[in-house]
Image (cartoon, rainbow over all chains, first blue to last red):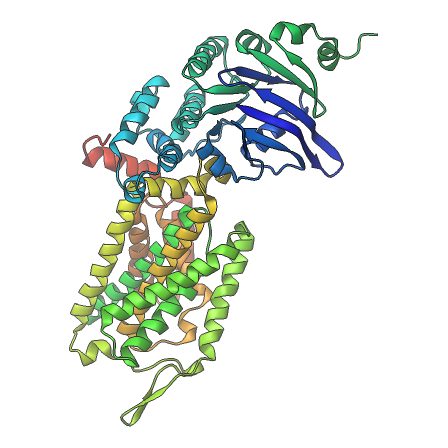
Length: 248
Length: 299
């Protein structure tokens, strides 16, 4: 689904991401972990095009997307959520989804007028379903800024899904959640995977990622130090060293 | 009576000017170029009726189109600058336009008179309304019909997906891009629409005052243009109208009996209102409450 080869991002002398190779198979939940500052969020920003790459290439389903602008990558099927929630606070819950659903309409080349000015019936049905899936059906007319924290996280996820992506990038979706909410998030991510969307999950919460990831890569100082199944990664000496310090 | 009709005309033109800034502000861009676009619309429309004998409506539309096209061209380079830099760049644009008309002579003989723009002297004798027998009342009604049409179009746009997209860009450009929004297209479209509306305001202004000159279209006017929507609130077109009535009707005219003290109070009242209602006279919360009161559920 997604293939990064020799991907690098340098900020002056700092190699935030350094020659990273990753291959994510369709239908996987792929975990990306690493200590703070190891380059995880930079990687997400490179994949979505918010940052330009220094070297290397990014391929989505075999197609080169390295130099496409961010909004075109969403049309091609890459959606994301943010580590620190970025909703459109002064728009209603409904409008937040309506904005994002446009990418799907664009992909299907529905006509200009119906897309921008009309309330396409299909779009309405789709947004209503997304609200029900996220448990926000009764909040449709609420301003996004007035939602509780957990609801905002759910809305951001719904907004990413509204574009009907092939690949979903989740940047620390469990940050600030209580164990009960994390349990619900776990179920939801599995449902998303089962609906045919590939997931790249960045997370600090080890219990969650070890439970649901099919495969995990570990970054440290911008480089991949290990990759494998959760069990393999946990047993890997380089990973223990990166997280716990050298045991000498 | 004529005094109130005159006031109504001023308020109509200023409402259009405020709405032109309203569209641009929704995308988070603070533009002081609106006075420049208004000047372009004013001169083009007036030249077409006076020098080429065009009918008024065609001339107004042409003025709006030229102003919109200019705004589109200004929009592309302006995209590369943000915040205060954009303010400075658009101030420069308004000044360039003003100085252009300060030096612009294009007069032709009309009987014993010479008509057309004459640099610093301005453009006199824009006599379409008196020549065609329009009274002040007709003009006021005509201006407010145009205002109502523009307001209806913007109100409709606000409720459409396009409106949501404009606001999304205004709130968070990074999130907007990540939601598949083409920032360039959205910002330039907003600039273009805003420029066209300002051009329309200019064309109407030129014809009801019958005399325009470069000093009508200064940074001060551009400041008023953005003050209306900011003071009125960005959640609805009615906020801009409310602010125009408040400033032009209440502050400028209503306090005239105070003599010289008026100017002092003028500034103080604007500051006071902004403190009491920091997100505008009609903010999102008020609009939501009003909507809940007045309409059935929409979705």
